[in-house]
Image (cartoon, rainbow, N blue to C red; front, side, top):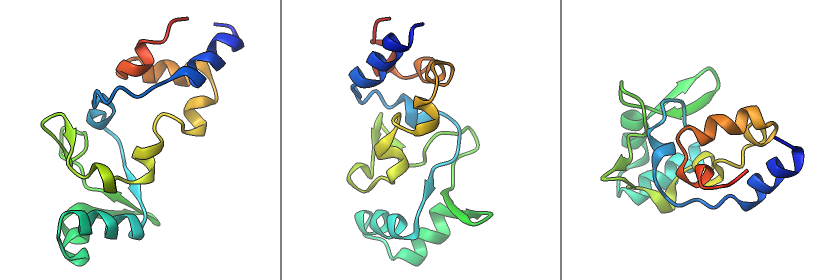
Length: 120
């Protein structure tokens, strides 16, 4: 793939809200402030939210995920905390490491319907 086609793919990407990215196993990192916002959106005290949904890995907080993977807040093909979702979710797939190379972008195309729709 030429650099120009790859750049066009990155530029022309539009999320179609398929939710597939929410079902991919992995970590969702979040700040305490993001956790507070999520707790508020669920009408839950932050300390309860933190105990139930957050864990600390090394020096960062992540959402606790079910054994099978995917986000615990992805229900009925929708994000149940969409307006309060963490920055990591808000910015996918515009992460520097994913935009850095076509090899990385190809990983997105395996499951992201918006990325699959781009020609090239």
